[in-house]
Amino acid sequence: MLDLLIIGAGVAGMSASIYAARRKLNFRIISKDIGGQTAKSSDVENYLGVRGSGAELTAKFMGHLGDLGVSIEANKVVSKVFKTDDTFHVELMDGEKIESKTVILAAGKIPRHLGVPGEEELYGKGVTYCATCDAPLFKGKTVAVIGGGNSALDAAINLSAYAEKIYILSDEPKFRGEQVMIDKVSADPKIEAIFNTQTTKILGTNFVEGLEYLDKISNEKKSISLQGIFVEIGWMTDSSFIDSSLVDLDEWKQIKIDLVCKTKTPGLFAAGDFSAVPFKQSIIAAGEGAKAALAAIDYLTAK
Image (cartoon, rainbow, N blue to C red; front, top):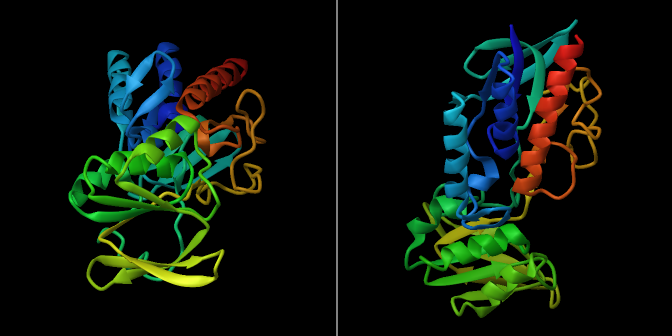
């Protein structure tokens, strides 16, 4: 029986594990990957005291955890979380079953899909959701980034080091991101923005060959020939593995919590982008992970 199980090894989960380790809890941290969205960011310029890539920041986190003897168990996918009496039961896709007195849900978000013809069929064949991961594969190619927020802008900036031409297709009349990123994109001759669009189809047989979009101003259908499509239209929470009676969700299916990361179920906490806390930022996730761990420690002490 564990004192604490942390599900997710993004910034929130790793931050929580530091506090659990320092309090000598019997705990585990499991996750399908390490670093979450932060690890996939090409540049992190708003994390106090740190400048560099998301991968570099994640490496610093991992070094800190290593100093405390914390080992993240990666490639662990949770299929079910439920509770009987005072015990949480967590089942993994590989068949393992874990029991714990408390659980912190810090599983982050997954990329939102376009839901258009050709997207699923050509995933991994030119359609991707991670510019940091896949940008080098498109050296000298023409690509499109779908989206108009910070994620799309960051992807375009990252791609500029490799691709010959980058289109950004946004469904709005202007970018929604931070001005410093908008300025970088606007000054890059490789990047061309096309606003007021709706992507309707991804073209290609074995690999991406182009896309079709609707010009929402003229109502005209248009197409672009290209070899890569980076979908950056936001992220969503997948809480389907949690017993629905344990948590309340908001309209975006994020878990509702109080000021110390408690859910409606005693002993169950949520932190970072998995929760309904506004402003999805790495530095906020770090603080929320710390709060969740401290709240779990208080709960265990009271019990």
